[in-house]
Image (tube, rainbow, N blue to C red):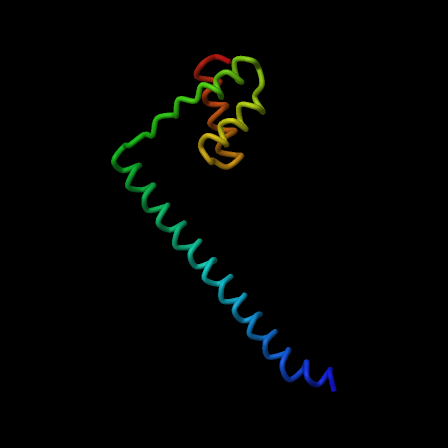
Length: 101
């Protein structure tokens, strides 16, 4: 009898949870797609206007670079800016090159 009770009560509840989970994943995916589209459009506007964002002044990152600790500099850059690992690495390498480090 207990297994029948589970099938009658539990299975529909499980199906509802799965449907809600799928719906939430779909909304998150749709939001990510819309955000990516907005970011592309914004970048086109910024590029068209010739706006160049200056590199942030990050003394801790520069200190690590001057001490030859590139990985620490990348980590400090990521913590300060919230950038991805790839973007932080590129920015730190650019900073090092500009300063001859």
